[in-house]
Amino acid sequence: MSTHAPLSVAVIGAGMAGRSHAAGYRNANTVFGAGLPPVRLAAIADANVALGEDAARRYGYEKALPSWEAVAEDPSIDAVSIVVGNDLHRPIAEALVAAGKHVLCEKPLAGSLEDARAMAEWERTADVVTAVGYTFRRSPAIAAIREHVRRGELGDLTLFSGRYWCDYATDPNGPLSWRFKGGPGSGALGDVGAHVIDAAEYVAGPIVSVSGASLSTQIAKRPLPLGAVVGHNAAPVSDETGEVENEDTASFTARFASGLVGTFSVSRTAFGLPNGLSFDVLGLGGRAAFDQHRPAEYLFDDAQPEARTRGARHIIAGPNLPYFAGGYPMEAPGVGGGNAEMFTYQARAFLDQIAGVADPLPACATFADALRTMEIIQAVVDSSRNDGAVTPVPSAA
Image (cartoon, helix red, strand yellow):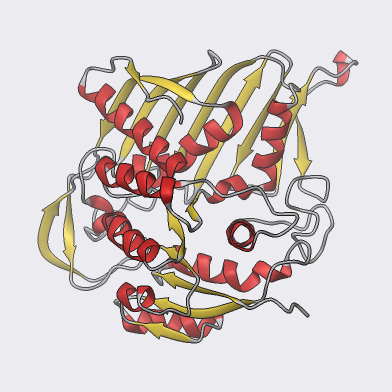
């Protein structure tokens, strides 16, 4: 048994993503090697008290708190996940960092580029760990594809094609929640596009410019909710409607630092696709593809010696892939895997950073990384406003 003092954790936000963080912390000490101190599940905070109490009960947290301020003021809490509306990220993170707490913030980093820049600036001098939840970096299949690229096994890259198509906003009677508020770039681009942009740079390197951008909104008005809206769930609505302020779909082309060209499209009104993150990366000597609807596998093709039997093959996730060995109770190929495990690995990586363990998982994305994603999103918006003109992206720090 560890003799180290427990790391005390809390989650601010008890919706679907908040519960994923809560479950991740609960499972963080069940994966990989020893060395991580015990994890104390201290609190889940949500203004919807009943929702917070339910999440605390489900995931074994000591208590539910009615506000994020109560978390900031609790000196016994060491590390906190922020999983609430984007506009609240900056004030909450600022208070937590000032209170000496380590912070794991959901993407996108903030509700505005100004707020994101301020947060990245604090990070430079903060004496706590600050991190961002780009959960797909923890996918064994995506991490394996990144390794193929890094080892040159696809040859010189020729094309990256990324999509994140979701259907959570296809119902015009869905409530006008906070997700539909904010200016261009804060809709499908900020919500799901941030993930596929980060995945693209994680696999294929930095993006230096975007062009050909187009943003559109298919459902211009939505009914106002009569109460709290949790996640993407339906909720009682009134007869009154409000304007949707951001995009339902977006597409653009990107140029990477290597010269590689990428094509991207994102949508929250893509019928029949509940969580359709997918991408293809092609090179002169091979190709690989991933689809989150089949998360325990990826497609790989290369120049096999015998042309007669060449062709794409499915690589089934197993202990030979990143994160799998030590990360699953049943370490055998073909047992599945998906969203919950990625949140567990992310929580473990965050806590590894805080504890300074001897053999940590790859570090989480930083506030600076997430600022960069938002700068790319802003470049996409600027390109769309200028008839698709080529728009440079600030250099990576």
